[in-house]
Length: 138
Image 1: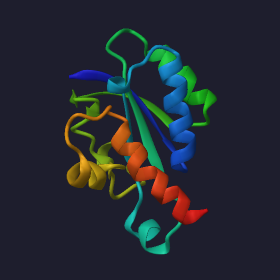
Image 2 (image 1 turned 30 degrees about the vertical axis):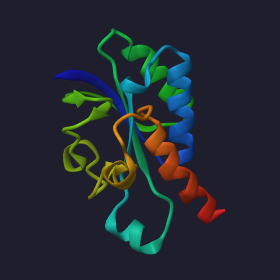
Image 3 (image 1 turned 90 degrees about the horizontal axis):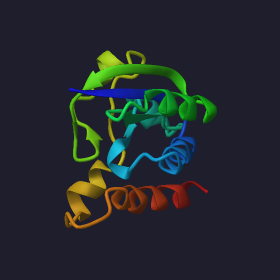
């Protein structure tokens, strides 16, 4: 089990900004995971998609992660233990970790399942998935 600091954002853009701030503070792309936390109602209504940003803090950098997330405007900042593999929080359970959210999954799941060759930068599939999503809403 790995120590994890996580919290919710109301949209992907501030979560991405927080991820970039974590990278600037020494976290690698293998230490940061962004997950979708939209409810079925939110998805049907086409409203804003709440997301969870999680940081694996095995190197004793939990306080740094918490500070960066707070500065980025995170909601429900929490610490937990979880299974972290290949740059993702693999045993994330939305019922346990985000009780107000009824469904959560990796944001780029569709991109990884359909387009990944396995040779990309761990964040690249997220960028390829998110960029078209943003352009369709602007």
